[in-house]
Structure formats: C-alpha cells, structure tokens
Image (tube, rainbow, N blue to C red):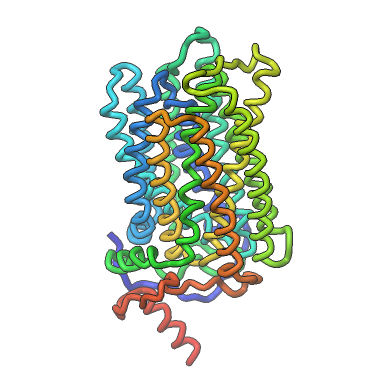
Length: 480
C-alpha cells in the first residue's frame, strides 16, 4: 500500500517528443493495448451470444454475477486506483479475464455453471479496477483540447481487440458442421492467451505523477492517497449533481448488450456468421469513435458548442438506428424464431440484419465516447477522474446486471427493444443540460475545476492530506 504525503513540483518540464514513453500518446496507446487483449477479447466472447454456447443460460448467469459485483466495486475502483497505482490495479483486473474465459472452456466439457458464475463474480471485481484506471488515464492524461482525440485513439485500439476476437471463432469454427452451435476448445484457449498478454502489458503503465502532458505539465502533482481520503471522496460522488445527470446514460450504455448479442446476433445468425458479424460490429465502433472524436475536438471553437452538437448528432443517429431495429424486430419473436442466416448462402436476406447489427456497434461507440468526453470535461486531475470513471462504470454495470437477467427471463423481444430505445433517448437531454451548465469554454491553459466534487461538502480536514499539502505549497510559491 502507498503512503500519503509526497508530491512533486508543479513547474512545467520541456516536452521533447509526443512519442516519448511518458507522453499521453504512448500511455493511452498502452492502456488501449491492455484493453485490446482483455475487455476486447471478452467483448468478442460475449458478442457471439451465450458466450459461444448453444444454451445462453450459463453466460447470462455469469454476466449477471459479473455486473452485480462490478456495480458495487466499480464505485470503489477509483479509490483503489488512487491508493495502489496503475500497475497493481490494472494487473489484478486483467488476471480475472483469463479466469473467466477459462471457465467457459471448463463448461464446454462439464456443463456446470458454478465455475462460470464464480469467475463472473471475480471478473466483476477485477473489471472495476481495470476500467477505473482506464477512465482516469484516458480522460486525464490529454490536454483539455484533445480529450476527444485521445478517447477515439483508445476506442480504436480497444475495439480492434473485438475485431481480432471476432475473427478467432470465425476462423476456428468456419468449417465445422452447419448445425454446430458451440465453439471449440481452441477458441477459448486463444482468448486466454491474449488476456494473459494484456496482464503483462499492464505492468508497463506509468503512474500519473510520472506522465507529462503535451503542454509540459504533469498529469498530477500528488503521488499518494490513502483509504480515509478515498472513502470520503467516494461518498461525496453520490451528492454530485453533475454525476447524477450522467446516471441514465451510464445505465443505458451497457443495457442494450444482452439484447443485441443474444437476441439479434445470437438468434438470427448461425455460429460462423456470428463471428463474422462481430468483426464488423467492433470495426464499426472504431469508425464511430473517430467520427465523434473529431466532432468533439475540432468541429467548433467553443468546447460547449462541440459537446452540444455531439449530443444532437448521436441523438438523431440513435433514433434512426433504433427505428431500424424496431422494423427488424417485428419480423420475429421467441415464439416465432427466425431462420438462422449464413453470410454466404442467404444473400439479400442477410444484408438487412447485418447492416443493423453493424449500426448498433457504430452507435455504441459514439454514445460511450460522448459520455467519456463529458466526464473528462468535468475535471482534469487523475485522482478526480478515476473516481468519476469508477462511478460511471458502477452505474453502467448495475444496468447490465439487470439487462442480462431480463434476457434470461425471456422478456418479449419487442419490449426489450423499446426499453433500450427509451433509456438511450432519455439520456440525451440530460447530457445536453450537463454540458450547458458544467462544461467550460477553455483553451486548455486553465484546467477544469477540480473542486470538492461539487457536492457542497467540505474536503478532508487532515493537514496530511495530499490535496491540502498541494494547495499550501502552491500558496507558498506564490507568496515567495
């Protein structure tokens, strides 16, 4: 455990190259590689529908366990990251992904859900650590004027993992019998190898106090935190009006996965085509992240205007895509299941559902990148943003836990689609209000306000607290 009280000078340092090891570009790229190997492969695994199994119950129960624990520990993840730093936090998180993929390898032979559910519980804890750290790195390392660009960079690398991960079951199961519905052992083994590599890469991430932004400032001047400070700051998150406006978007942002993966890709397509579709679903996310990243960083001079335009574009696109989903959903149900489509044999019958599934991936990336940009615009320091990201992931995971049980209970598919559409639509005006009231027009020379989480509660009173020490040191320098 780290100890409180050390800090570095706040003076700027010379910036020699954007490709130096302690640059935001390299560090965000590294966390992108970590997520390429771990969450990226996990997304490919879940994107096949049922975790690659004929019966989706084991995957649904494991995912419910995963997101239930994630919803609890997600809120705590930022505090854990601030106390232990990136190496320990990220490595602990990544290792649980390996176990989760291994549990489905075990299920392939034993047909016992117990291991998969237990692995889901552990992954919920580990993923909360990983995503809190990822959120802090992605949103606090870039300067204020380039946060959208770096969020897009991360999202491209991360979702390339989903593309490669989609190719794995597609290639390894391509020549299997037409009626094969469960992926082979090698599929899970390859996933485990990638996830193990991601665990090792996580050990190369630098702590925030060693990272120098492109403008020459450090990402943080506080090296250490402690349990008391983090406990107080995490409790204050629930009083933060800004974060309360993000709750509907956070809840919606993973809620639609169970519907899209199990009830669109899983029900409408055969095994090899599900892998084929996943390549394009995650590829669409790469395209969507680039588009929204450009809008949020370069479309207008005013940062607030860029954010509002971004919300408007995502809202219009989301309405069109969910309307297309409604038209598709009216053609089948649990009581009237569709004929399984194959990308080679079904021609025009395959084209429409394929474009829809591709569009779902496009919307997912644009929606989540928009929310991350808003979070990043609310503060600048790694300490604050790790907590904000943890809060976001915690609420997001609570929604996902409910969604996976909705899928298990066989709620009518049309009802599931309507709920997803309503949830995402509800979030747009709230995000617009948040941007209008809280996002400041800044040129990047003045950081966003990192106040006491805007809760109205006082900061920790201890004179040993790192935030208090930093404030005093800056005051002394000014007086000197």
